[in-house]
Length: 239
Ligand SMILES: [Zn+2]
Image (tube, rainbow, N blue to C red; front, side, top):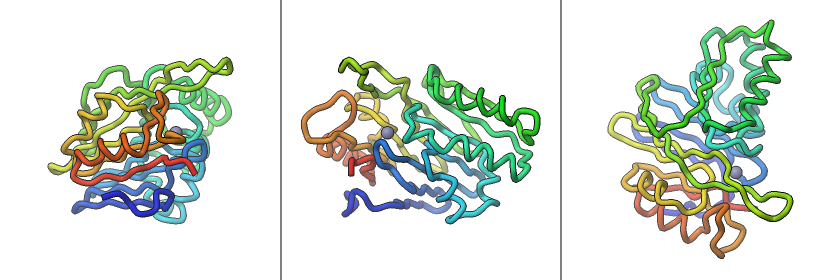
């Protein structure tokens, strides 16, 4: 199953009370994903527009329930909404602590957090826990088991060479179901392994054409991986 229009959002998947909604996933523009169960409210890759999308769709009550944010990597289309989300939660006088998981070495999240604390630290109504991830060890949050896994994403330097970006995918397990989110990645064995047998795989197909790239996957590569899951979405397809 490939969704008919690769630029049509939101994408929604639900099995009983395991639910995920992808509001957007456009390279260089924005990503934004909500994952919920009856006991859990997570946000994945809050890019620009996430606060608008969540406000329109689920409202303040649900946004206040978000316990954990998962960041695949620090590129702006995946973290551009963090600042406004953090501010919004403080304006609403949130009390619950908030954890932000991100690949160790992701300088963007650290920088956003440090700047945010500097501006709002004194009046902040809630605790922010930064959780850099450096291993692929699983952990559980509010009934959902999370397995982070390393993927292979690179960025182009001004001189045309590429360098590695600290990047993770996440597999979420709940009630004998699993959702695999690969983040941004070139074709890599780790994603192949993690996507296989998932109830839903969310696979990026961000390459600009069908020639092989060490930055993103082609539609053909992403589809081949997606087909090893029970269902899949192709995301992050360039406009
Ligand atoms: Zn991206």
